Structure formats: structure tokens, C-alpha cells
Amino acid sequence: MPSIDNEVVFEGRHIELHADPSIPVCRSSVDSEDVYVEAVARLLDLPVPDVRYFLYTSDVSVCSVDKFAADCTSGTDIYASLWPHEHELVHAAAAPLGRAPAFLAEGLAQGMTSETMLDPDERLHSVPVLDSIAFFAGDAPQHYRVASDFTRYLVKRFGIEPFVTLYRSSLFFDDAITIQQQFQHVMGVPIDSVIADWQTAPGVDADHAFPTAISRCLLPPTPPTAPNLWSGTEPVDCIGDFYPRSELLQQNRHTIDVDAPGLLSLQVTSPADARLPVYFNDCGGDDPELYQLIDNGRASLSLASVLPGRHALQMFQMSTSFDVTRSAQWTIANHGPIGSTCDTATPITVPDPMVFSVEWDDTPGRWTLVQDPVNGDRYEAWVRFEGLNQEKLDVHLLDNGDHVVTGTACTGTCNALTDCVDAREYGPWNVAPNTNTVYMHLTTPAANAGSFFILLFDGG
Image (cartoon, rainbow, N blue to C red):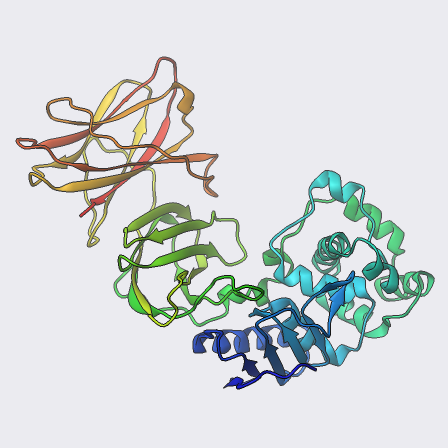
């Protein structure tokens, strides 16, 4: 195998990472992937392996798929130009089960780590390639996608234990007929019948097929700093970026446990020279993902209605200067149940921002956002609409002289608690001299009732 000159070795509980010295590996990522390997082994009911991971700066010449260089695993040794490559970590964790047919081995590794599913029409016309030689000799990328989608369906339908039994009792070089016979022996039904059922079934994502091994959700929950409030300031030392022929997917990670449904806000700030992608996801549910790109020190805020359960916060640094560690301040607040009616802004007891909700019966109306603002203050508002046809909705933010003060609008995403929700961002705007009130004004040319929720904070 290729050697790594002047390698830097990171020793975790289970992973021994041998990295090229030019690659900025963050220590916390090794700890996180130790936890991931433990979770995969626990899911498969196997002992946790000791993994040697060799991280190169160029494509690894010892491995290839369809004549292209690729990361690969031999037993519990991984050779890669990507860190962390959790697909390969799944292979290493499953090594004690033996070398299974490619559609099972790659289906498990890809099914646990990929975020994509086949489209319904694509699934309807797909068939898993059972022969391992044909799997890698043909359209390998598509065979991986099909195997991943099919494996998730198998695990969701039959459970992980029968799947592991099938995996353990099948061999890489088994022909299609042998695999079909073994499948019926273990699963109790013909594989052709199961494939036909899968082709017309809804897709299953990784979070629902393998809920106990979602890598972003495995760390112990961060305790709240106050009731329904989580916050922190930390160095974001995990780089996520592309190199000439290597890639880093490291992340600073946190989990939080939300106890009650409500309107949740995520606010992140960072230094002026930082680029920090930030993700906030639930763990195995259907709440929307929040995404922000914190660029040039701009504070960013997102909100969504969430259900109780565990959620994950992930962030990493994108920069051309890797010798400088940036820090980030983040705050997550659960503002409580949504849907109460009010005519004026009623700030709740959180440091900042303010939030309130309004039920609207399509009558043109004004709602007070800010009373007695300080001249020259800058404000930003995030407004989410539920059940409102925005093609028939006119929204303005006005000062007390009826001067329009809104900025550019942008669209949002859908919400798990209600039908489709649209979010628009207004501001920042400067409060003009002699202004004592800022309003939100809504009108519509046709019947258009629903709810909207406003989050308002000082734009600095």
C-alpha cells in the first residue's frame, strides 16, 4: 500500500488515523467517528473493531471502481482521500460478517450514509444487480444507488437481524441463482416478489431505516443554558473543504433534546473573515432542515416549527487560511407553541429575538412590530406564512409615516406541523428619525386566510 511521508497519527478509542501532514484534521472529528463506529457495530450486533484509516492527499491507486480510483476498505484497514468517509467505516464495522455480495455490502454502506433516494419512476424500472462482478463492471454508480435504496427497504420491512443473517450467509462470488435461493431461505419470500414490492413502495431514507446510527445525532445532548434555550461560543476548528484531489467533511457537532413542539429559532454569528455552513436537522423525524451560510461575519437566523425529539447542530469552516481557527456564537431557542392570536407585538422572555404570531381572516390589517425604537437602529424580520396563498398577498413593513422600509424577500421551505410554509426575510432596515412605530401591513385582493409568525431582532 502507498506510504504517507511524515504522517500524522491521531489515535482514537477505535480509529487510528494516519494522515498526510498537509491535511488539517480536527481532533473532535476522530472522537465523533469513534462514536459512529460504535453505533454501527451495535446496530449489527458485532464487537467494535479497531480501524486503521490512511488518509492521502491524492487518489488512492490501490483501489478502483469501474476503472476509476476510489476509496476502499480491506478488512478493517481503510485507504481514502476523504475524511471522514463513513461509507468505508461501515465496511470496516461489518468486516466480521465476511465478504458479502456487492449489492448487500455496498447497499448497507451506501444505504446508511447517503442522503439520496431513487425517484418513484426510477425505482419502478430498477432491479438490483445480484452478481458482484456485474455490479462493478457495469454502471457502478447507478448500481450503488439502487442497492442503497433496496437495502433500506429490506431493513425497514424485515428488520436488521434477518438482513445481517442474509449478509453473513452469502458470499461475494455467489451467482444470482445461489443468492436467490439463500434470500428465500433467510427471508421466507422469493427475492423477485420483494423486488416487485419495493419497486412500487415509497422510498425509505437512511434516518428511518437506521435510526440508531445517524452519525450527526450520536453525541450526548448539550444541556440547555436556560429553559428552552441552548447557546455556546466555540472554536470551529473542523474544516470542510475540497483539496486538489482530497476532501474533508469534518464538522463541529452538537445535539439538543426538544421537549415540546414550538417555533424554534437558530441564530449564529462569526468573525468577519469566516465562512461557516451551519445545518440543523432532526434525528429520524420529518422536521425541516435549517441551513445557513455565515459569510463575512454576518449574523444569520432561521426558524422552523419543530416537534419534540433530538435535533443535531452541525457547522464547519470553509477558508483558504487553515492556520487560523474561527469561533462562532450560536443560540437555539424554543419559543413555545404557535397559533395564539394577538394584535400587537408581545415579546416573549428570551434575550433576543422577539417572536409573535397572528391569525388572519383576510381583512387588511396592521400589526405592531416595534414601538419606540431608537433612532438609527437596524432591524431584521423573518416572517413565516401558513395556509396563505402568497400570490394573493401583499406584505409591507412600514414606519409610522407609512414609509416602506422592507428589504429584499426570499423564499423558504415546508414545515412538518402544517401545510407548506413560506418564509420571507425583510431587512435589515434603519429606523428613520422621529419614528416611534414599525408596522407589518398585509392586504389581499381575494379571500386568503391563515396564520403568520414573525421573528424580529436587532440587526446591529
